[in-house]
Length: 415
Image (cartoon, rainbow, N blue to C red; front, side, top):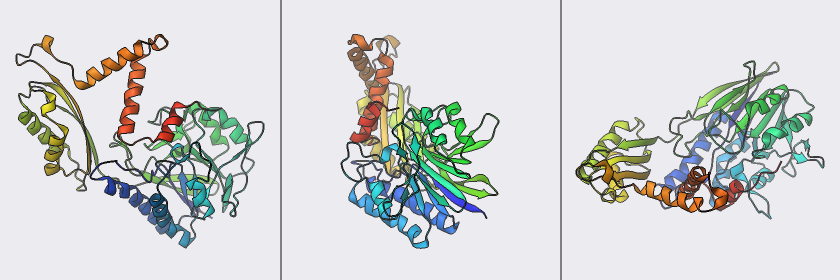
């Protein structure tokens, strides 16, 4: 008997851009992606849809997000295809004193939320899923035993032995929201490949999540065992070159195999445009628009744009304002959302390098470096902490992190 599963992760329902004209459509993009995944699962007649964490973009979702999620999952419920899910770091509700949205979906029968129990000695116990309570650590579909772990933080590698020790069944599949160093593009919540390899002895297929770039992890002798589909939609700028999709997983004669199925994310363009030598703002604007026109993707849907303007110019960078650029870009690209980073530097008309003035970004970095360096505890780490400060600032401005998640990132991980 052949069993088939559709493995996806990092859907990030509820993601949008605050105070952006395209915020409503961007909000809908992620639900449209889930709708297409559900349709694929039904058309392929899979035995279960697997979601390896980060179904939601934040733990504290809006009621309309919850209602829309139910509408997306309803077709699976109607045809009897179970949706088996785990919690990712974005799904957490920190400092909570009530039931989470993931638990609510599970109790209502829209997903089967897998979460293990921890023992007094620090081990794991994967209790069978209880339909009445909507909780459990494992569930059996045909001959396959599906285990769920969720996100356990940066110390995940040290938990692998305890995880494997808790499994006594065969034909096992593990949902695990964790990244693998050297494969995953994220920098938080990863473990080393050599720490992950023992999972291959217990689980025939490890269904990963967390990193938004797809990858396959192989054992030291070249056998694939862990698969990360990445996010099916482009969640953040920087993902424009990633393949987007999910895995159609087959189990036959005791062996798992996987086929990558592409999805259709919204087009995204990230470009650095060098405007060096521009004598005035009009000339720089024309050069910028020409370059954007050359780089626009063939996909006719309204793209997401991130432009970084660099170079030494003979006019004040403020003359090429963001609003002026946005209006001009609307005519040639009609972007759904645009972000502009102005790193232009002003030079004298004579082009004397000695009279070059620093860009706004350079001034900002210098001020932060001086403030950080004034504390003796941080001397020698100025560059690292400046980069961290600016990264957190950018994430907050782009609505890529909420207050609870920020507290989690800055907090300590438990072992």
